[in-house]
Amino acid sequence: MGKAIGIDLGTTFSAVAHVNEYGKPEIIPNADNHRITSSVILFKDGSVTIGNVAKQHARSAPEQIVEFVKREMGKSKETFFRTFDGKDYSAEELSSLILTKLKQDAEAYLNTEITDAVITVPAYFHDAERQATRNAGKIAGLNVLQVLNEPSAAALAYGINQLGYEQTVLVFDLGGGTFDVTIIKVAGSKIEMIATNGDHRLGGKDWDDKIIIHAAELFEIEHGENPLQDLRAYQGLQLNAVNAKILLSHQQKTSITCEYKGKTTLVELTREKFEELTIGLLEKCSALCKIVLSEGNMTWADIDRVLLVGGSTRMPMVQEMITNISGKKVNPHEVDPDEIVALGAALQGTLHQISESNTATIDVPDTVPEQLFGPDGAPKVTVSDGATHNLGLVVLNSLHEPAIHVMIPKMTAIPCEKEDSFRTVEDNQRSVLIEVVQGLEQDQLKDDIEVFEDYKLGECTLQLPQGLPEGAPINIIYTYNRHQLLEVTATVLSSDDAKGVYDLFSIIKRPTLNAEEVAQAQTELQGLAVK
Image (spheres, one colour):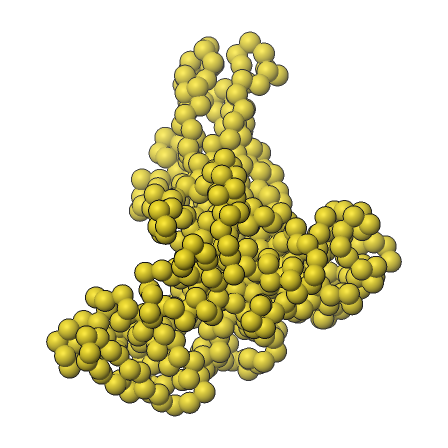
C-alpha cells in the first residue's frame, strides 16, 4: 500500500497535499512549482495538458479545452459530454484526467507510489455527484479512501492545532463554482458537523459572469454586436474578467478590454460597480448563512470563529458582508483559503490508513503515528461527518396521500444504518412501488413538490407473494456509508413463513458510470498521455 494523499478537486483550481515525516500536512507543488493547479484540460495532438498551460490556450484554442467540469459531476454521459479525437468524455472521465495529473505530480515530488486518496466535495453535493467523484478517482487509478466534505476537511486542518480548545466554528466556503456554509463544533479531540447548507452552483465563476455580461453589453451598445456569440471572444473576455476581479480585491478600479471582429471596447470597472453588479450573489450567501444558523438552532452569538475557505473569500465584499451580518471581525489570513481543504484531506487520509491498516504495510514514517495518535492508540483528532440531506421514501399517510417519510434525517452522524417497517394497504396486494428520495422534509406531500424527479434517487416495483393480508410488513433498510452514498434494501416476509426472506435488492439508479463503464474508462484512458 502506497502513500495516501488528500485532494481538493475544485471547479477552477485543485490542490493536493500529504502528511510529511513530522506528521504535518503540507501542499505538494505541481510540475511547474505552483501550489495549486488550474482545473483546466487541454486536448491537443493526442495528449492532454492540465493546469496553467491549458488555461493559456483558452483564448487561442477554446474548442480544445474543458473548464468548470465539477459543475457537471453527477450528470449522465448522455446529458453532458465533450468529444475529442472521436471519443466522448463524461464528466467523471474528464475529472479523472485532473486527478491523474495531481497523482503524477505527487509521485514525482515525493518519489514514491501513490495508491490511496481522500477526495473532497462540497458538503451539499448529492448522491450522484459523490458517486461521480469516486468514479473519477477510480479511473485515475486511485483507491478512494473517503469522499469527504470540504468544510469538514477545512475544520480538520484548522482543528488539529486547536486541540483542547472548545469552540464553535462557522466554515464559510466560497470556491470557484460552489458554496457551502457549515457549523462545526471543535471539542477536545472531536470535530463534529452541526449543520450545513449551500448551493453547488454558486461560486466565483458567477461573479466572473457578471463582469463578462456587463462588458459584453457595453460592447454591444458601442458596436451593435454581441461578443458572447463567438467562443474565442468569450474566452478572452473571461480571462480579462477573472483578472479584473482579482485586481479589484486590491485596488479600487481597473479596466477590461473586450475585443471582437477587430473592434475594441475598453470598460472601466470600479470596485463599487462590481459590488453593485454582484449584490444578488452576495445576498444568496447571506441568506444561506441565516438558514444554517436556524438549522443549527444558533445565532451569531453562538459562533466563536468564522473560517474563510475558498479563493472567492478574498473579495473584500465577502469579508465585509460576513462582518456586517455577524458582528465579528474575520481574519482572512488565519488559513490559506486555497490550501486548507487539501491539507485536511491529507490528514484524514493518513489517519484512515493508520487506523485501518498495519503500519508496516503503508508508506508512513514511524514518527507520524506518534504525532497523530495518542498513547492509547486513538487518533488525537476525529471528524464526525453528518448526512447533508434528508434521505427517505414515499409512503401513503393516514389519508392515503403520497407523502415523504424520512429514514435518515439530515445531520445524522455517518456511517449509519436505519431500518423501518411498513405495511401493505390491502389483502393480497401483489406489488408496491418504492421511491427513494433525497433532500425532502418529513410529511411533505409528493404531489405538492415541484420537480419531484429531481429529488428521486431510484425506484423499484417490488413484487409481493400471494396471500399477504392487509398490514403485512415490508422492511426497508437504508445504509449510508462514509462516502455519503446510499444503498437501499427491502425485505418482504412470505405468507407461509414469517422468517423467510422473499426479496432483497438495491434500487439506487444513478446516472453516473456503472462499475463496468468505470473499468472500461480506466483501461481506455491508460494510453492517454497526461502532462
